[in-house]
Length: 320
Picture (cartoon, one colour):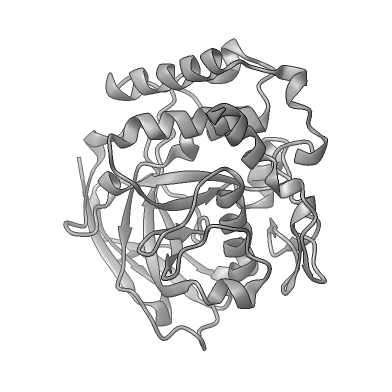
């Protein structure tokens, strides 16, 4: 019953829930296909190469035992500090929906009683989506144990193939248990906004080529650093932030936030509804991050500062 419930939730996005005049997943905003501002049609959101509504689970159906076994394989690799295996190697026809069910079991086995710290979006640029043959972003779960905000110290030896990303975080102030219709409704649930440094680590020996491998392995969620929250954010234009990343006072990258992600609120709306569709709820104190703004960087030892303009700064140290 639990598996059936998760499968049903994973296809929730196929329901037509018109809110305003927009269609999520049909229009390009900046570099991300997440819909036009102010419009949404959740029923046409896509994850993977096929529309969820048209993907038949029976075509590549896995039973509950096989789902659990894939999750256990991922968990054994994680606990043994080994490279994460590709689930597509043993199940080449694994669907996107099934990959999310594997992810759910894998994540729950890693939690050991803790709750998600938040949720993340991955493959948020058109370049990344084209590379993996998909036309939507993917989602993963952030672990509270990966919060490095207190020390702001990144030890490269604790990761396998870590990357560094600058992102924007949105803290949940009011629980979200059902799909959100539009941006106005969404904003009623957001308590604060803050800069984030994410440290994704897919943990694989080589770069994955199948999107199901990324999804099942929880989209590389590993660690993060949160900046100071901004509660008075109503007038902030998140699409016009100038973000600068420096290493030892040398500029690594400078970018306007809209060039990487398009409309941030559209991205948050899509992400929240995708999380709900995959069986999770968002509770006060949890947060979501919308994907990299400054290009992904492989960190080297040094002292870094990420300047998010009106949203604040994060400084941190990277050591071996």
